[in-house]
Amino acid sequence: MTAIKKSKTCELEIIDLAFGGKGLAKPEGFPVFVDRCIPGDLACVKIIKKKKSWAEGKLIKILKPSSSRHTGKCRYCNYCGGCKWQELSYDLQLEYKKRHVIESLHHIGRLKDVKVNDVLASDLVYEYRNKMEFSCSPKRWLMPEELENEEIIKDFGIGLHVPGTFDKVIDIRQCEIMPGLGNRILETVRNFIKTSGLLAYDLKTHEGFWRFLMLRHSVAFDTWMVNIVTRDKRQDVVSDLSDLLTREFLQIESVMYNITDSKSGVSTGKEEICLFGKDHIKEKLGNLVFKISANSFFQTNTRSCEKLYAKVAEYAGLKGDETVLDLYSGTGTIPIWLSGRAKQVYGIEIVKSAVVDAKTNASLNNIENCEFLEGDIKDVLPGLKIIPDVMIIDPPRVGMHKDVVSQVLSIGPSKIVYVSCNPATLARDLEMISQKYEVMEIQPVDMFPHTYHIESVALLLKK
Ligand SMILES: C[S@@+](CC[C@H](N)C(=O)[O-])C[C@H]1O[C@@H](n2cnc3c(N)ncnc32)[C@H](O)[C@@H]1O
Image (cartoon, rainbow, N blue to C red; front, top):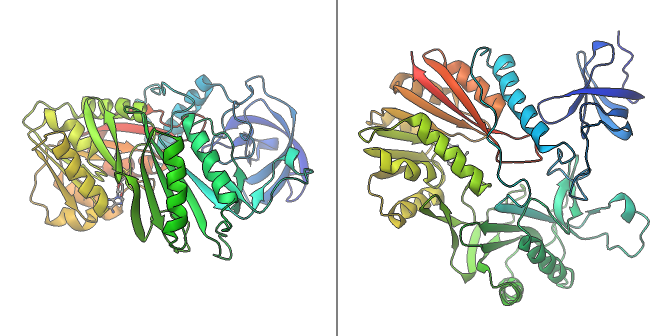
């Protein structure tokens, strides 16, 4: 019997980091997970969940900080859901990320002897994100030093969510993982909204107007896209904001306006209007140019993305006469990256606008050997007449549908390169694929410094 009881407060020594980024304590061998703690911390913790074989604790206070702790750059890092690992040195972050990949392979995929390389680090550890999405809320989450301040406006905030309070946001003034100008754009939008006379959207009541501000930055061209999302259509109001922004910031190349009354928290509009400039921005990966629309998927760390794709190309080992099939092809970035080294590359993607972007991206780069098919992979694959030599698979966080795994196994290309942003589903899918394929090597690539997230590329050869 453990002494750990729900609602009780206890002193715990954090001995490890668990997947999901939480600190792990093991009083009398009983695992307790505590958010925002790192190994070496002595913490005062309140037990908020107690199960048979584990418990979850809420950090009340760090009693003695770990010697690995250092001060995070961001003033919100102990509260915001964004970068919870800022107080851990970057070298240690990389070490833990590699371990999470190895442990997921062991525990979830029962794959014990796979070679996992050291993580390829991100060149930038701050200002690395090329896309940020800030939510508007009529319930501002107050920082401890703001609690007693009577002058603070509490019925509006624009920023990032606090974990566990889905409808409250921290009013973020300075986000360190976005390039600097983004914070100035955010400030101008905040001031405009405050004097607009229109309310922020409330996720509980579904009332209110302002929903999201999405910013995209092109590293290669140093230009910005601003995307404003509201519940109702008030083009007059949002055009005024667009005019203000484009007068103040010459780097803004595109202002998009998305309107959605959808009750889910998604920012894709039911209607989309281009208020200024083009309906996309351009970015470069290597020497290739890509068009990115407001709602298309594009890897969020541009320079790390190049490292990731270089690894994909290395593992694909193309000689020039191969047929390549890329599953989950997004805006066509991987097929286009590989096009110069293969005979023909096909991509399959479910989102129509991404397929349209992929075709445009191919012609933008004068590429003629890429073809993009639209649809759900599990429906498209069975009717496909292509016999690929190499298959690239880059699914979303949830991994592959099990029917798709069976389809891939029956197609049986000689080589598979699997790209994953989630070690848990990577391990699950590789276990299934390893019935017929040998997992040769895995290369983790860090796209997301200060978070526990890690991207991986795996090379699989047919047995
Ligand atoms: C992780 S992204 C990879 C995109 C691309 N490889 C890249 O690097 O930018 C996953 C992509 O899979 C697409 N997707 C998700 N489920 C799908 C499905 N069932 N069939 C086809 N595409 C799907 C998403 O729309 C998204 O573009």
